[in-house]
Length: 332
Image (tube, rainbow, N blue to C red; front, side, top):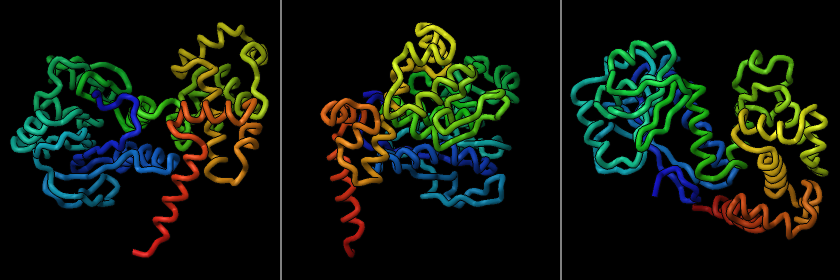
């Protein structure tokens, strides 16, 4: 089974962090996964950090990051993310390149995060695949590795290889992984935790929590999303929503697909279901009350939609979190 297909099974990820890696680059991998775990109330993502010698790695912020141990090419099959920022060549020893080649035989996926792409290319692990490269290094990378198809994308998933072009593109990658595994609703909710795009991207359009992380360059899409968020209890039909924005329903559908990769009804439903899940988790409201507050005609309709998106019923969510809370409260 491909690693990033739809599933609720926990995913283990190993991170090999090299010296002089940016702290934000490490956070760009881990924080979306931590956010997904918190929102779901379950450890659907787990990670281990390794360094070449097992010692804490010194980041460019002079904040050392501890490691679980030294990196060894064992038979682990978990995806391996190789993280590097500056002076990666100091770590690109023959030993490390050989270890990467050996571990690639077992890993279900290998990812080069920012300058980690150079390490994978040095180990001949990106031959004949497309790879994203930081814009500052693009020309040098393309000249150094003609056997690699360097592309000017934020991130690339090509078979069993992943590459990213920087810290913020890495957040995009992690959101895409979450979307493929747990669906659009969870990816959207995690994206709301990260408002990282510069204001110039949006022009005069105010950035709201629902637009965070979606890079909506068309103000009409951002306006439509704000209208959706303001009308959760009584959802607007597509034709009325499009009229409020000043375009046809068909044009709005095309704008959404181009801007965020999902049609309006999918995004609107995700907003409503995420609002409902927060109420399921954070309040004691009945499911009928939650259904009414999030635009569903009945508790049964709400429950079906909830289960279809989150793979458990609203009552199942509350029962699971109650068991988890009880287990934590019990003395060890």
